[in-house]
Structure formats: structure tokens, C-alpha cells
Length: 146
Image (cartoon, rainbow, N blue to C red; front, side, top):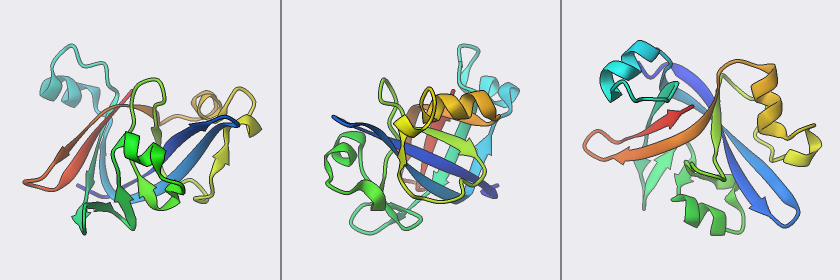
């Protein structure tokens, strides 16, 4: 448990277009076993993955070297490169299995059809964030992905 690596991509929308901010997360637990997801969350579960991410605490949750912010606070900071969030809905974030080569921001317009759509078309293990919950007794986030 907690031996997987994923890369989370946070989406930032502005007048010039979308920018994706990647964060490689090592030492996480990624479960993509559909039978296990249905057993835990019920037959109406449409998610294809659940990601458990442990966090520390220093004036708020810390994941790796980045501070966690709620989606609205993350969107409001001037420079989100040292922050992380889990956003679902229309401006969703997503994660992929494995390591993305670097953590430089990615301009969505540089990819035909958009960065997320390109990854969905060209690789397996791409999951849009559908929900996230923070737990404090055993400090971790549970992130659901479709």
C-alpha cells in the first residue's frame, strides 16, 4: 500500500486559455479494481479509480512539498506552482498513472484538441477528478477518478 506514483494536473483557467500545473506524487495508493470500488462504494459507483494520498501538516495540509488549498483558494493565488488542489466539475483536474517528465506548466493550446483530450486519446490510466475528501484521523485525501 502507498507504493504507487501518479501525476496530478491542476487546471488554471484565465483569459488567455487553460494552463495545466503537473505535480508528481510518489508513495500514494491507486486502486483501479472496479470490483473493489463497487464493493466499497456501491453498484451506482461510476468511478474507475480511487487515489489515497497521505498528507502532513504545517499551517495546513502539505502533500509532498506543496501546500494544499481548496479549489477556490488555489484559483485565487498569484502563483500556484507550490500549491495543490483537487478540483472536480466543469474545471476539473485529472491524474495519470506514473510520472510526467517534468513539473513545468503546460499550455493547453499547444496540444491539438487540448492537453487532457490528447492524453485520453494516447494513453491508458488517465482519470478526471470526480470528487475528493479530506480525512484527519488517518491524515489522507481520497480522490475519486473517472
